Each structure stands twice: as C-alpha cells, then as structure tokens.
Image 1 (cartoon, rainbow, N blue to C red):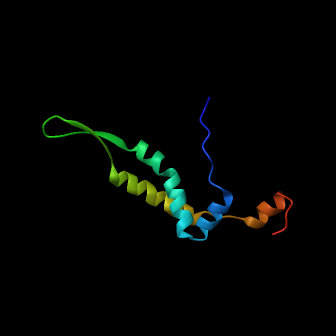
Image 2: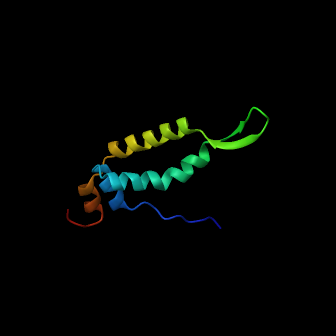
Length: 88
C-alpha cells in the first residue's frame, strides 16, 4: 500500500502566489525532504572514508527554481469559482 501524504492546500498556494513569506516557506519546507533525498551523494575523504552528503549547490538551485515557479504561478480564482458553482 502506498503512503498517502497530506497535500498542500489551495488556500496556501493562493497566499504564496500573493507573496506571503510564511506560505512560501511552508511550501519550500514541504518539498525540502524530497529535494534533499534527490541530491544525496557519496563523498570519499582523503583517508578513504565515505560520507553521505547533500549537494548544497543543486539543492539551492532547485529551491530557487521552485520559489520562482511559485511566484509565476497564475491562479484564476474566477474560473475556478465558476467551475465549482460559487460566486467570487
């Protein structure tokens, strides 16, 4: 059985699009574990010791990309409200 994780609420997305820093940080925090997991790598030390580390450069680039996509996201509330049969 597949694990079900809670989804990001629509209201949080709308707040993030309106440049609410708390909402943006919550979304980044939601995806942070996934991003870190994707960029783990094995690093060998000078004495042959192996350590698992996160590639911080790639992690930062992906988080920056996610941040830019959040800000460029277009929420059409009127269209959604009409589809749901509500007035906006």
